[in-house]
Length: 512
Image 1 (cartoon, rainbow, N blue to C red):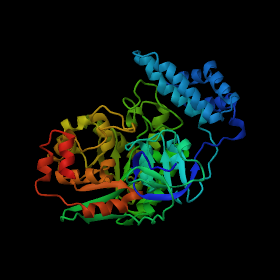
Image 2 (image 1 turned 90 degrees about the horizontal axis):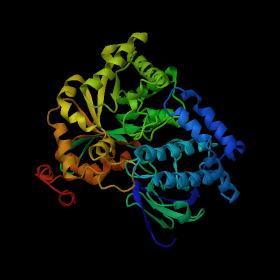
Image 3 (image 1 turned 90 degrees about the vertical axis):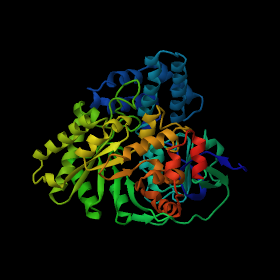
Image 4 (image 1 turned 135 degrees about the vertical axis):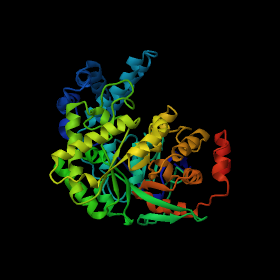
């Protein structure tokens, strides 16, 4: 590899080191289909009441899947590679069905079953200072990253707004994604430079500067507009790494569960809340947002489009899921005895749904000794387009808003946030800017942008121009975002001109 290879910039920064291939490592018992399938079936037992249980159990007993995997191993493939090749073969068969939406929906189920076969991998020791290269990574693998940082990361299966991307940015690792079969392109042992700013990888060495500590709080643009920066985090230890006010605009609590592959208990949530609130009183805990690509024990509900329907509180009707959601809420409510606690509600469509979730959480206070309702604050994630129709009512019922631009763009444009290349993944479109501007007009409570739009220079500039002043960004790259904000200059009438555009090209011309 002598020429520069371009992919998609996922997490900013420049890192350099030897290439190390991040593969799944298996214990001896899981190098054959029969044993792996038995363990996968065992892991499904807690979900017997779920709709997907019978389907997944049946697929794990499918002789076609077993034969494809075993044939692949006989042809010299590793167990992981044989499972993935079998997945591709079955997916092609399913895709050939064409037109039948039910059959087409099974392609996603095939992927989840193959993940089940591979889920019990043994822990991988990630060598420090290396550039990790992987064709495919799961959320759990990203979350297993040691706190000592890799020099860089190259992932094949991810896009700028995916949850894998969010976690890479949260860890502050220069990352490039969207490259087909990167392990073939970049052999182990070769020294490469990963440029997460431009999305490029090239052979060579570079001395990467250690990133500065992220100081949350106020920062002024070059033209004197005061902006407040907060942090997005996925674990309690990230809070302690922050500087300044240590303000957390979005605590993605579901990753505490995904990282350990089990839901934390009520006592564990009491400790997490206690530890975090000892570091800062300015933190917003988002309730579990399990669903779509974020699954625990691969408990995805079998539906044709898992990004819709049952997600977050909409899964409370599942007895097992509700027990874990209740344990989380009780643990967080216990912290009101000593501190103000802010709870953010994800994936709500309107005031009726939001108030239902809020009331359910408040009622659980009756089960918490010493619960103090006056210390409880509620916010709403604005990520479903329907909230615009109800924004005034939500403004009167809640204490703050958080704009999840990744999901908002996905649902606003009927696109897929996991897609590698998508022209709808940025707020720099006339209709997106007008939608976001409309959210601002009637509200009286604080509103913070929490999605990827707050981590990109051009999108930041556009959002500031139309009136946004609070941004919660990945903790790992917060220092670089702070610098970007300080260099932004907003020309007079930029906001008005942006809202008058008709095409993306016109938006880009105004922002450059």
